[in-house]
Amino acid sequence: MSRLKWLPMLMAAACAGLAGAQESGVRLPDIGSSAASAVSPGEMKEYGASMLHEMRSYNMVLDDPLVGDYLHALGYRLVSVSDRPDLEFTFFVVRSNEINAFAAPGGYIGVNVGLMNAMHTEDELAAVIAHEIAHVTQQHLLRAFEDSRKSSLPIALAMLGALVATSGRSDDASQAVLMSGVSLIQQRAINFTRYDEIEADRVGIQSLARAGYEPLAMAETFATMQRVMRVNGVDIPEFLRSHPVDVNRIADAKARAVKLGETAGIARAPTPSSGPGAVDASLPRTGSTLDLSLPSGPSVAEAAITSTRGNSFELMRERARTLNADSANAIVRYYADELQRNPDSNTLANRYGHALALVRARQPDKAIVEFGKLLASDPDNSVFQLGMADAEDQAGKRTSAFARYERLSANFPGNRAIALAFTDSLLARNDAKSALRAQDLLRPLLSRYKEDPDLQRSFARASEIGGDKIRAAEAYAEWAFLNGRAEDALNQLKALSSKQELTYYQRARVDSRITAMTPIVLDLRKRERRNADDEKNGGFSASAVNPMHCRTHRCPGVSLSRNISPLQ
Image (tube, rainbow, N blue to C red; front, side, top):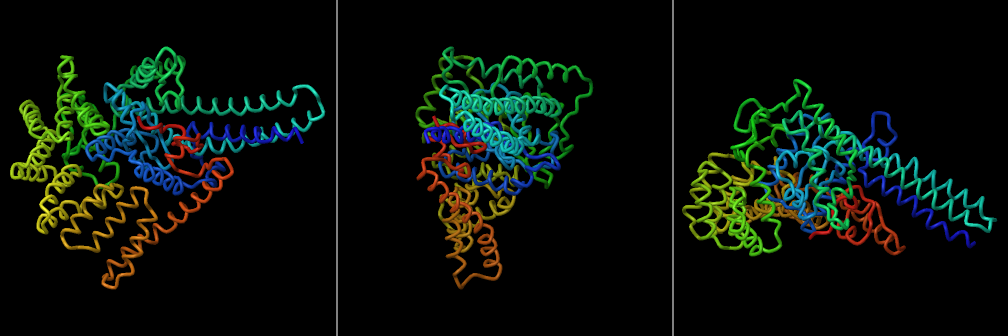
């Protein structure tokens, strides 16, 4: 019976191997792979969406339309030249100062604010995103899961047999067998991780070159992140923990980039040839600004393609830094000190960050002065115009702000950032006429941005003030669902469905959402029961998508344990 004490360690070793393989990014299958029967693409998409909604419930997602649309445009520029341009991706920003990015099931790509802050150019940011896209397009996610099932459990069973065979011996053979098996499981996980990472590097470099970015940016980014590590090994960037880098890997990335650069006729990204959202990947990325115009194409990919050239990256990096700061006054001091102490910091991007920080710190008069200087140097910059409108609105200069919002809305119809900012100004008037105008601004965007909780909340408020209580209740339910409160959303819709005054179309719409949400809520209840049982037994559940749980436990979930660190 004493030898049974090894059994928990044996099973823990098998689980560790399973988690290690998952941490490398669990692979989607090739045609004919048995992993296809394990998790379907639809289930993967549901898992990724559930993860995103859960993260929102803990305020871990930076849902800013300007930063989000910029990242979406950059991501789809790379997706369009990847091996799988037909796949749907969701790019989002994580409220974390850790230097990290990750790929989750269903094509969900998360980029930490800390990673954006650490990058110096758009090419470096594109290199990291291209690497994560490659994890999805090269089908790494379910393949790692399949490999772990094929290797970890057989090794564990072999270890168990060896332990039984050595049970009558008085030496340390049992301990040796156990440690050998654990080492073998861990080595297989490490080797699998290295293979995936190198393959993602190579595919990502190809995408960079095809999209018109600098192929060497991949190796340079890894080398830069290595240099930020402290001598004692503390504060290793989270990206390097989940994506291990060595000298050989950096050298291989450089060699491949140089080879691509020497090859004549590198393919460039196919982009719209005309229209306000057109991008010419062959043009130098200097001197232009973020394009807020409505894309011309109807597809998901085309809807995401806006200009990502020029100083757009620098502006959005500082915007993300400002919006993610814990203290509004602290971020104001940060920019003020930088601009005063370091002459090289006197850039448009840093001055924009400073002006934005002043708005966030409720100092609109100072912000108006700063935005005025920015517009004097670049009067046609729509990002600066939008910032000025927000500052004027906060300062009580409603007439001037309203006129500026109107011009922006006319020049860039259908732009989400402008529509939401204009809606906030309209709803502050708290009258039915302004609310109806806000509804008109937001209604066309609801189908294009189904996953935007801020859009749903603003539309709900506009409907409520405008007197459309039914539509308001529907939008509030969607807002709750997107913020990780699926059961609350379902209960709201069920209560709404019981009202007799619903029209045929209203009832059909509500019943349709109830039908869609019910299996999701039932699945969440099952997870919660499994989690409760696992916690009671002193274990953990691989099925849980709970960021708070994974902050204190080593979860084997595909993305959370591997990538998302505690907030700073």
